Image 1 (cartoon, each protein chain N blue to C red):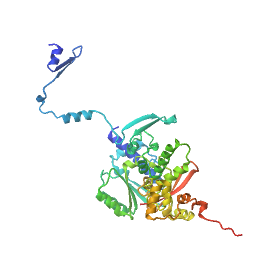
Image 2: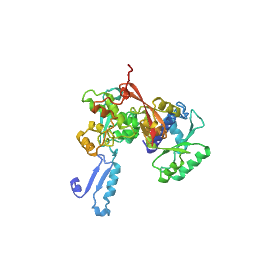
Image 3: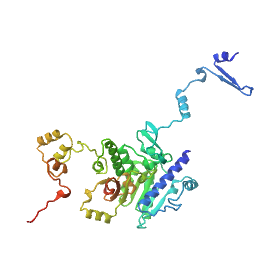
Image 4: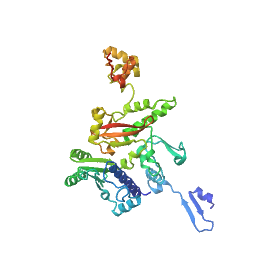
Length: 211
Length: 215
């Protein structure tokens, strides 16, 4: 396999994982449409080649199923090492269009100043960073990863009331945890985890996002 | 001259039977070529050879998987490189890559997968001792992954625990007892282990309350 073919295959997989991730987060993604998850590897190769191998052509803009006003951008920067100028450019674009959330799919580590620029944008704009390598596969499809479900604020309140708990009494999950990042969790959110259990068939537990 | 004479003078010679081609090799003293860069020769030789390595993996075995069927084959490696395994999606079923490197699993697949891997490995160890209730092992795994990371389950990680009896019931009873006596520490008897050590009903479940009967 030539390096260009390998690169196209990689990007196809990364794009598919990003779409599945957005779908699992509740964004409007079609499982069958050729624009979304229905696109085959061959179609992807055609489109990507026709665009002149431009990563900009992969940019996505999606909205939440429950609230069309909440939108998200996914950027695929050209630069192997993303710099501050590029981050500022994304920031301008998000501010102009009033979008509060974006995912950047990096080819490698960013420059320190770019990293700082990302942190400065919170909480007005939330930028999530993923490495291409991390998105080659969808970790939630792994046999050892149980079913995770992010609770809404009302569901969380109901849970704490039902067990008479403070949220600090729940088991925890780190914000930088692979699954927490998959669902884009922020500190204070709670995930419901349904594990297979030898004794009970299924066992539900909860983890509070910290860090 | 015969072929042997030629070979003695550093000349090799070959030709096709019908005389369609002739191949002559000349051997010259190294000085004739000027300087010889051994490094260049080595680099050229290395480029011509196909060698691949996966960092961290030292040996690879292709084995028949237990169970057979569609999954008749599995690859087992000595050393762990999950990134490399995940990149080989066209060769292996990436949803079933597993490792006994719990920390690597936890980082790559999240704390719940780390917990599941831990339970599976604990089970494998205890299976040889007969039946151990999975609740015990699940409890240990829950303890170790409670804060979202991976915490050791040993007396060193337990040093900061407030209950002296709990620490004594785990390991090195006399060492803990001596230290507690020297420092004059007390136990609030709220941990289940402390209650069991002292033969009391632990403050859990139906032990959390008492009944008063009116006669």
